[in-house]
Amino acid sequence: MSTPDETPPEDVRPSEGLEGLYPFLYAGRAGLDTALEEAMRSTVQKAAEIVRLRRQMAEESAAELAACAEEMADRFAAGGRLFSFGNGGSSTDAQEVATVFLDPPRGRALPALSLTTDVAVVTALSNDVGFEVVFARQLAALGRSGDIAVGLSTSGGSANVIRAFEEAARRGMLTVGLAGGGGGRLAELGLLDHLFIVPSSSVHRIQEAQTTLYHVLWELTRHALEARVPAGGGQPPGAPEGPGPDPAAPRARDPGRGPRS
Image (tube, rainbow, N blue to C red; front, side, top):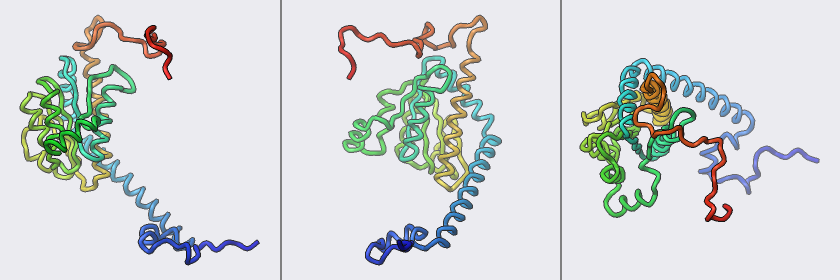
């Protein structure tokens, strides 16, 4: 039995465009080794860069992160809610921001909503009014003084994020922005209560650092709320009365409903 040739025959070779995108698949063993070495070098370099950025943000923004978390805790304790928003990858991050506060790995759940999750609302506003108002219109309907607005933009120049912050500021909401580079228009507005800028030109590194930032904000806010528990015990200010349902206990089924399918 003959050994198959590693080079695909001419009649099954990919188009020139595809081969240009994945040259290491068709360059033989030497080309593959070079590609793997380059990938390893690039991975190590990127990992070192994000570690450096996180350390820099910790050194430069520690005090403001703590102050922001205290203000967020004040808002939550008084019954405030958190609204998050962003575009593209920042839309996914906005959903994670809401999730980590609403369904935390530990501690009490806090009221939070991502304004990017309702496709019907986002597409209706985009189609009927304009994409620049998809977040501002939702805040106009749902937001109130005492709430928290958290917006993410790697460039700091997203028009709909800016419009949302302008609406949030008009309503007396606490405004918290996460941006990259030089902060873009968000840094120029002068209306944000807190703006955390990741000093990088790489969208990937900015988003990785922003992930760390909002998880740190959640941790600090949780600790700030726990510190507000009265000395004799009990719930933090603004928390619902009673211990709440035991998540490990079985849920009672409505006798009027049939079995779940």
